[in-house]
Image (cartoon, rainbow, N blue to C red; front, side, top):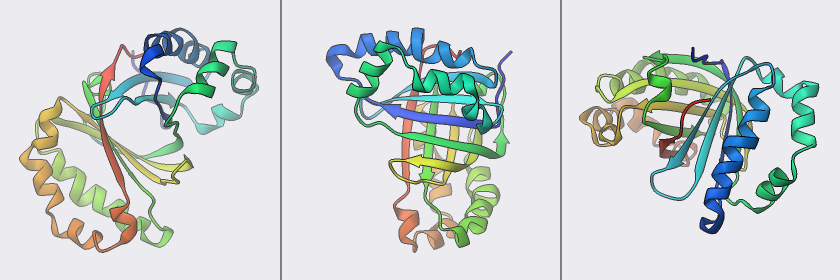
Length: 218
């Protein structure tokens, strides 16, 4: 059974095309298995970006405290030689840690392994976070979920963000790329509430990106 933990570690990185196959072998046979052997890691899914050569991984955990355990410290601080080489040679590295603040729509064993995810990231000023969260909960996400290709959304408050300190991340689970061109997405982007938020520089500096599922869920 798929377990969807309330905390995540989300990371992107890009291998050189000349050793991309080696990178994928390392990820599936080294990087993921040693973490999934640690109590508190509950599930992992990998993705590849639609518009560039980045790979994404999302680890589900029972709590961010998992990353403070002796077992995780051993894995992190005593990596294999292949891990040292990979982390020293990949580009476009990002790392985000957060705790779930909402689940909307359908979040289950089917949607969590959806063919695509759409990741939206924002660095929201503290005094704007209540309004931003209400906009997502009351306007933006409900409009998206009216479409058949938007399956569900998980939203997170991030405590670590590298290299850009995004503190709000939404993971939208999509049935296919049609979701990105759907009338529901156009409606959500045209809402009056969203238009008001576009007056803020921080909102316009948000980042969104689509990824296609890569491999099976661990």
